[in-house]
Length: 238
Image (tube, rainbow, N blue to C red; front, side, top):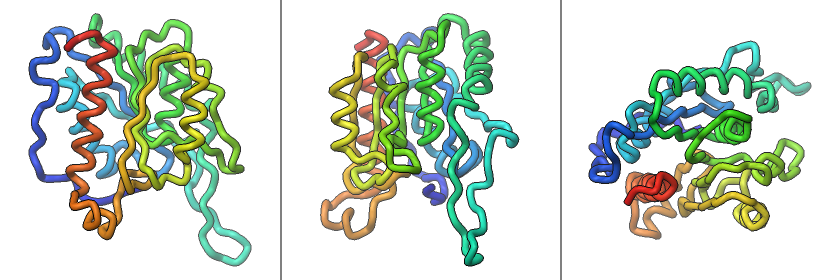
C-alpha cells in the first residue's frame, strides 16, 4: 500500500452546488488488508471523498484484530512471505454493525459504502445484505483475483446496488480485461474509472508520469471527479 504522506494541496469541494446540505451523503469507508484506517493512504482518501461528495461525514474504522491475520509470515528459508488476507465473509457482520450505527446517527442521509481493496469487497457483501439501503458502492482497487488466481465475481453478480470501480491500469489483482468481462455480466448499474499507470494503490511510476506529462495529484483528482459524478447520478441530483 502507498505510504506517502498526506498531500498538502487544497482540493476544491467538487460537490459544491450538487447537494442540499441537509441531505448530504454519509460515507462508510473500509480499509484494506495491508494497512489500518490510520494509514496515510486512508487519511488522504478520506479527506478527498469528503470534499468530493460534500459528505456530512466519512466514517472510517478498523476491523477487529481477531479477524485479521499477520500480513507477513516466515517461510522455510527464513525470508518474509505475504500471508493471505482474512476471509472477507468473516468481516461482514462487524462491518454491517458500523453501517447500522452510522445510518442511525444520520437518518435520511443517503448512504455510500466505500472501501480500499479487501474493504471494497466486504462493502459489496454488506450492500447485498437484506435491510441495507446503500445508494452506491465505491471500490478503490477491487481485488478481483484471489490468492489462487481465481476470479472472485460472485458477490458482484448478485449486487443490487450501483457500483463504481476505480482501478489502476497496472493493478495485478484486477486485470482490466477480466473486470470488463465481469461488468458485462452484472445486473446492476456499474462504472469504471481507470488510473493510467496506477498500481493496486494507484501509485504511478515517475517515468510514466513524465511520459504522460501528468502528476500523481492530477490523476487522483480525475478519479475523485469521476466518483463525484457517479454518486451524483445515483442520487438523482445534477
